[in-house]
Image 1 (cartoon, rainbow, N blue to C red):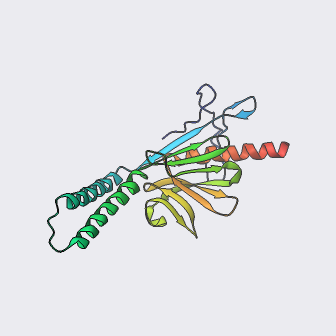
Image 2 (image 1 turned 180 degrees about the horizontal axis):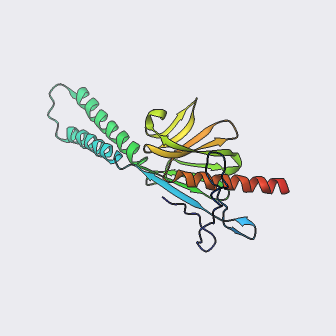
Image 3 (image 1 turned 135 degrees about the vertical axis):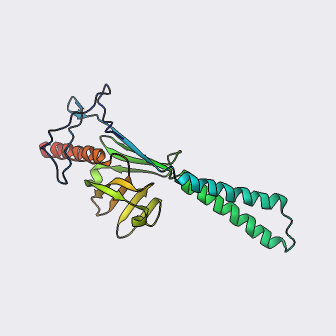
Length: 208
């Protein structure tokens, strides 16, 4: 995933020289502007195709539950049959939702906020105002083990994360002391754009 920063006519934003770098070795990006207003937008996403295998397993559990309910010939009583059917259907639906909802993530950064949409229907959805962000850091390797699994995760000592695959991502440091981590392709570009937004906002506040 490349840096898809766009100007008012779809023109790419210009980058600063290589030797002018921000903390962490990431060079800043100067967003495209029009009349002194930042109009650039960055988008990125990450996909985990392996989770489709789990979705297949969920569909199999759901089908088994339906098969038991329709064609079961159990003779040991109704209660065990109902428990088996409910268990298979519930497990299948849970697995299907967990995989389809988090098989990919889409990130959008504009002049005011960062938005994260999960899955094919964009739910769950998180929107964070850049005015609430202190800084952004590149995370070269984010793993489900660090967060206790895939999906939308929360840990009191680490903050919140959206993890759809192993690999690169970025970490937002928020003004309330919490962090928000997202796995996304070309995360370094996202960090550059977010830092540029923050620097631009700080400059405007200082000149006001």
